[in-house]
Length: 150
Image (cartoon, rainbow, N blue to C red):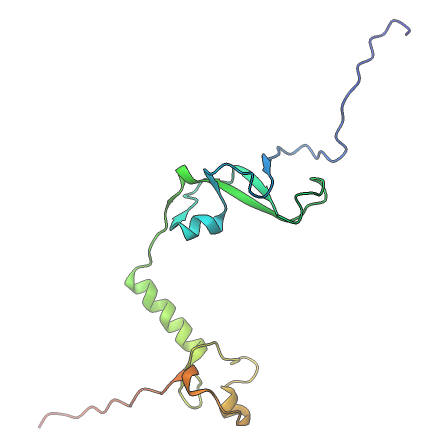
């Protein structure tokens, strides 16, 4: 050499300078780390803390890190909090919103699924006569008749 000290540098061509999370393959993550779905199934939520690791999907576990786009965030179960429960007022508001999407404006039947009100404007039975399954809707409520006591 010419007297200068040349150091070799190990460079990662895929490194964008951002900090990386620890990455685990399918079934190899610690038991304390859970995905959002696993937290929800246990009645928990992340509780305001961010993810601490990544989980690679089952089919991408054999691929290099740079080609896998199917990642799930992992959260610490010991920092998770119980899921909040909706209040009665919130549940009532959600029921009214769903009733607006499930009730036919023509025949007033409430179906168990959302109706195509933006495109058709009514249920299929009112629109083109397609018979509806009787198990898929509830009959409209009887009208309330108010009479003055005499």
